[in-house]
Length: 268
Image 1 (cartoon, rainbow, N blue to C red):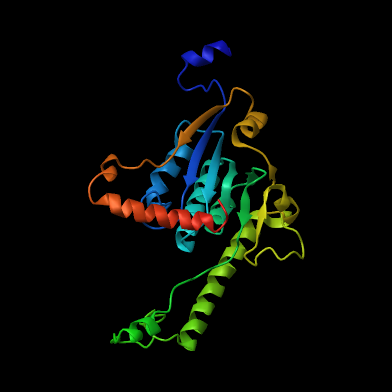
Image 2 (cartoon, helix red, strand yellow):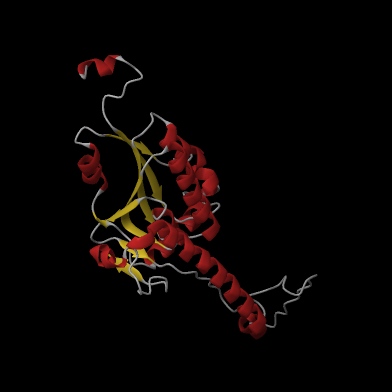
């Protein structure tokens, strides 16, 4: 019977695991960025094509957009529940901030001994250029309908009310992030530990916190769970061929610089 399976199309001869590659900064746009719209079809295929026994997420992301992180994570969970397919996350260099948000959509999270995880917090950064333009005799003119419309204008002096408003927004997003992690990790999280202050952990150092399930790599772990004959089917975003040429070269270069800066925050 076992030998006949390869001649019967609707019978699977061996377990299949879809490997979904999620590498890059999380943003609604940008070359190579991870976005819900850009990943929707890929995620759908990973859960549906060939009726996989599991989906493995290969995660390498320093984070990015909170909303895109939430949308991607929600899509993964929605399909996992709908298809009744277990999800395993495997962290490569880093799964920080939004990267960890997506990784925690999995039922289990595994890391390399050098992987960086955590950074459960919210950050907003910019520059104050008002004194610089004043030095060169440049006057900033802004006209708005709505007093908060020019909030955090970098060419005007910092307004304490603007800072207070941004902090309130950050606290709200942070709270949603914390709720997501608590919902996904549940009783595995270490009681009484301050896990949500933006700190990061390396490899097995994260084990006591409950943010990960252990140190392990994708291929051997999937073989351990599904057997040596498990079929690993890869899914990853492809860079458009036309994007290598023309005016997009400058945009690609700037995007690459921004991506590298995001990763280098964690020393990778």
